[in-house]
Length: 443
Image 1 (tube, rainbow, N blue to C red):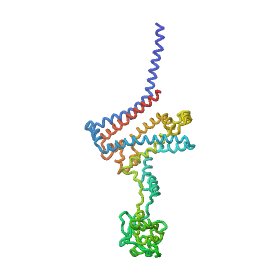
Image 2 (image 1 turned 30 degrees about the vertical axis):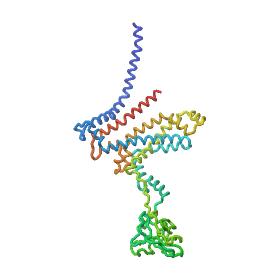
Image 3 (image 1 turned 120 degrees about the vertical axis):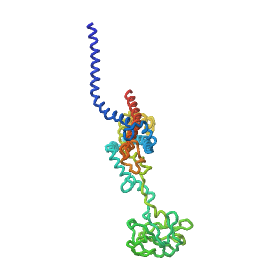
Image 4 (image 1 turned 135 degrees about the horizontal axis):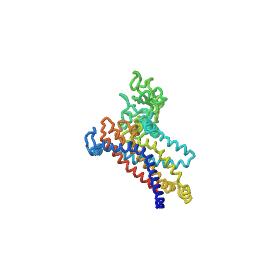
């Protein structure tokens, strides 16, 4: 009997020790469980409860708020834009992170580059929104994006210095129908031609322009003057070159006969030009290129491009996050596999596609799923970057939740329904991530 008691005591002691360990673990977990309940479970339960009541919170309406989600065009736009965000932003940020992580391994200054790419993560979403609101400013003198767009455009299709120029009254010029102007009749060699224009602001005149002078007659040549037929403060004569008036330097003049350009010239600083003898008897034309409006750039924050523009700001911030995680995974890839593939004759693209990417697949999935969860909750970037006039076009679910719950026409019942919808959309992705993490831990 005593032997049996001695054998039972170790088992009882082990059970008591296990109970004590569980109690200690529960004691340490209790504060976290209390916070989890207060900050997560209780708000979720209250949101679900509040979504079943009307705007005032007094009348039970059942699923009416969820039906309103389907009917409301603003919420449908938010759903569509959220789907675009989920489909585009995580994939682009992950792809850039993979590209940066792979390429920076091959350069000496890779660490410095990684630091620069990761630095936006140190900036809050609000600050990033303010930065990109300026980057996308429509004025090329303020917005970097439009400064680049205008600079590139003007390299291939420079704008004119005279977009507002036009013939004045009783002018020898008339519209040609395509933005150009032509003389009313043919010109003759040895007879100077006057081509007066108005509408050019004095401050818009090209640098180096000088007072206009009447062209001299040159035998066998067509000469003339194209100038700003306007005297500041009044005075001067119409269709006459006055000493106070300025030549339109750089204006292109063409001689046209039978629809074909037979001669051309560019006006000098004083507005004078000279055409060859082939211009005799032709019409003179000032082509539309002289009056091309200055390129104003791209309307980045307009209704069409505002969502891609905001996604670009998000990618700028989170590509560094993806790069760091993928870079850590890349450091764990066995180098002998890569070298063996190269020895067997595989090219760099084959090594990347068939070895590097498959080995990085778990890390890529982690990054992609994390960013998918993140973009479903994006709010501040859209709120700050999108101007009020196009905020409906850039709307996403998290922003719609805020506008519905706390806007000028607040409806917290409908807002709670949107919050529940957002939770329903996020939970499957989170469960997928947890399942994948458990699967990885079990290997």
